[in-house]
Length: 305
Figure 1 (cartoon, rainbow, N blue to C red):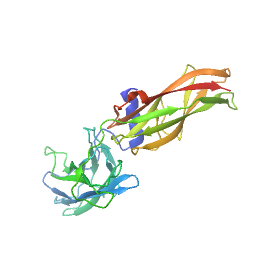
Figure 2: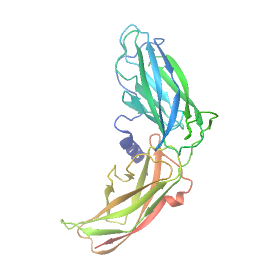
Figure 3: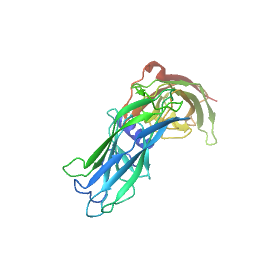
Figure 4: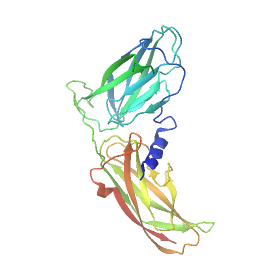
């Protein structure tokens, strides 16, 4: 799969607001006009990993109403889950965590205004009976001038245990390689009203680890004359197809189907063998390495009639 295709796939997941270009907007305040402070980020165990919000307070001391830029560096790669109130953001390159660039939500700040909002985070990992912690998060109010930031505040991600404790947290260490597997069954194409053929390849995708990722995708290889017709459930599908449902929890398994189309002139019978490759990307299309690439490929027989 080419980098261009991967970028298109990631763009489909992150939405129209995700790009590598900066945010456009009105003039930014002059340096030295703002200060930022943060609360404590406590990630609570849920039925789907951990979730929590970081309260951010911005004090604006400028003399004119102005929009301010916000940069949030993740403590845990892939954990950023939006702002409240919501505001469009763009994602930087993963290194391995990302820095997310937004405007301070709520529009222009007035002289002397003190504004509060939250940054939401979700970590898709198995909840533990002990507390955990990850440092390295940062919030910055950027200005767009030669001074790279008016003020910054550091934060850590503190994971509450399933027993309710925050005491004696252990370091949270996330997987750096994916651990996924794909399997596929045979496809039987049926004649359609217009004479063409259409069939489904049943597939199962399972992800065991908690490596940060934006999307899992399937790249099919089909016998000559056959084409991809999409997926069920539907998602972005060009030369490669996204696995619908967004990011995976460790141990999560999804059943999907790859749709295969053949023209009317194809004769009934054995049409050959196809295959599919399962891959993942994070941070604007960078392909991830799996612990066992061999089980990321599945083959399937195709028949018509």
